[in-house]
Length: 405
Image (cartoon, rainbow, N blue to C red; front, side, top):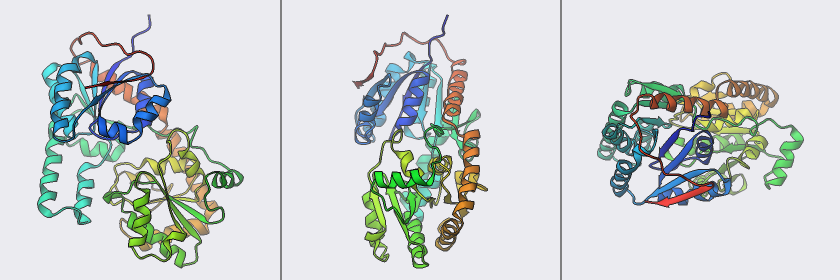
């Protein structure tokens, strides 16, 4: 007799990645509870529908603090229909989930994929918030982490760095791999294919193409990357830099605001592409991927680059430190060090690509997509062994369905 799939409620309080939702839905009987705004504006709703993935979606109305109240009420009504609740992060949504789980006797697993406090501190460092707001915000983040860490059945941290951080907050900690890297999709290509991809996507064919794939936010420090490329150009490198994502226009505007020489000639932005279809093309055709983060929980983009055999220059912070030996790492905020690293790659491209291929070996050994979801299902299954009996589960027909809360 075949065992029924695990019934999992995945509670999001913000944006989430289609790769994680699809991979999780393939491994269990999944219901996604998500705020309507993020679900719709991120493109996740459309992508999920197009994927044909079998998943129930409950959209929860309201922004903060309305979402806080409506999501808690939703959990109280529905949590016992599931074997386990998986809560995104260790913030306000996870607080709701862990409290509801304790009240109802349902196991709750939290999944932290960002360095929340360091990210918040980066906003203060860059002057985005004042000292009082910074202190209040950090206190709130820490309070949420403490509550969810103590009440969760299990807390997962993405990669070794975040696992170490949440180990200070939870007594039962596991390391996670999020959606991992699809090493069958993100694969090395030869020079002819790289050129063909540039032509396909209308990219400069003869320049040293640098991909800055990060979103435009304070902790990502795009200024350092832009300044480094500008100085590398001043030292003779015919480089262009491309940003993919929802903030691509901000990236181009930022280059102009920095007063860099003729940024319209070498700074480009493109909207986000489907991460399960077209994204690999850009990693494969790039000469270099740069990530200049002030803080970083993990850095999946550099892992995807390495899986393609594309060299990486990144800052030596947080989760990026695991790339020592397979990427060129520089101090945070150090423009000159990043310039030197970029020029080293351009002047030693064959050596850099061999280093990146060693990085692919590391990705295949540690970060494969299959391992990510196998390990996640193991953790969720272990959590259910501490659960009480659940009430009957509502059935979901084939296809991506949405029910509105």
